[in-house]
Length: 312
Ligand code: ZN
Image 1: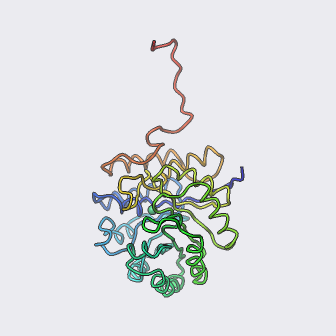
Image 2 (image 1 turned 45 degrees about the vertical axis):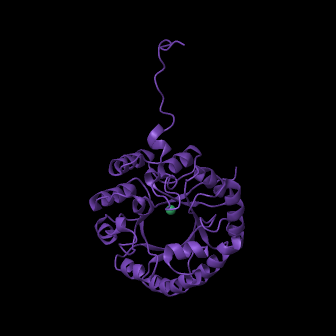
């Protein structure tokens, strides 16, 4: 198998996860969880999203969370900012990185950002220099890269249209999302192999929702094509309004476990991460979407019974 030695995981649970919870998670719990994630070894954490509180009421405390977390050295604390107003607020919070986000399909971008693709790109073209000027890193996300809830299949040209503009703006890290969990491993392999070939200087990252239980299979396919950066969410939090009953993101602990079992380094301490998973379990009113929080770590052996205890 063609596998990387090392993979970078970006923890998006505090943003993508919490924003999808119906019940408000107390600010101090959010801060505790972000701090615990950093201590478990996650070097990249998306802390919150700076959006209008009416759009995402769950993240109304973005400023407070960002200003009260411990800023561990060596950890990149990132904020999502979907528009100019968000960027202006985000800059004041001195994140290490600002992640911009738009969709590669017209109807999803209109429903999500209330703008055409061209309008989003034009706005980003004025936002990116403002961010870079402050010495803050910038990355660009693309929703619906592997399928759209309104338009169905997405041609690779739709990804390239946005990627070309991102590259021209000076964005080096580009995240491609399977927002509605439509992707399958072969589709992921073919798409990212093509993109890695076309854009050798872009640092591609995948954001894969586990709506149809294919996220880990898709990650395996992506690694074989050469991708080494993935978003994941503690407890498998997250989701999408177009698949309300579905699972969320790939669970960070499930991903860390798979990679550790394959000898791929992530720098994350799985025991510490599972403790964070338990913290998350205590603040959400539903079972987490995480195999490891259910089954526990592998290779924890039971004592064999002295004799057969069950008959029949
Ligand atoms: Zn997501």
